[in-house]
Length: 215
Image (cartoon, rainbow, N blue to C red):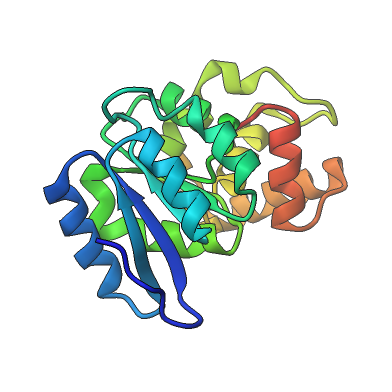
């Protein structure tokens, strides 16, 4: 079911191979002001055609669909439709999948089990070009030993954890909860990160994290 978008809305293509899941997600999204599902797809090939036809602000993409895997399609989708931000919605709760999806070009990674509470926020952030990762996965990803390989600028292990969570779209309060720190301590770490890296805005810190393969 494809629809003409309402003017000024965040247009969305919804890609999932389960019709019932798509129907539920469509209802969830369209109950929100300013969100409009303009097309649906059930496999990668159809997804690419829908994105090319509708140029949505956001593509919600399931990782597990019949035929070709969705992960290799992410760079192609980003190249062919650079103005479309990709929100991965999946049952895969392994941080390795999240890291791979973000490196491939997705801007957000949401677990299906948390879709009801997190998907709308992820879509709105994605439409603004901001990264989002489910909080549980974000904390696990930030704590992985591989993540602490050490970019330059003398960042400490804790500062790298904080930087990764900032880049993944979390607020100081959320980071404090994830890392069992006070908000004041997180603010202090953030100030040190900004001073050491010379990056002061969230966008610049996201770019830094991507450049140093922290996402």
